[in-house]
Image (cartoon, rainbow, N blue to C red; front, side, top):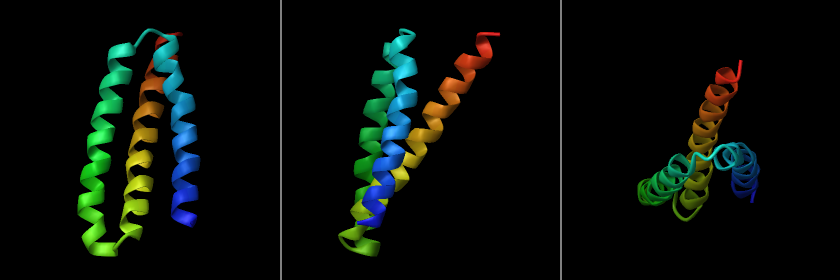
Length: 84
């Protein structure tokens, strides 16, 4: 359960940051990121499941949301820098 729990923590943290996109009317960016990272999640599952078995799906979840967190942190940091 550890990979799933780690992925859930990262997912919640990235969702908190993604609300900045919604609050600042970056709807296109939000929707595009959700679509792209949904597709990449499936790609990670196809890539990691043959290597690790079913636990590869959990690893895919962690990897995908780690990248999503980095993306949302980048967008949020860019927005915050633009406020100055």
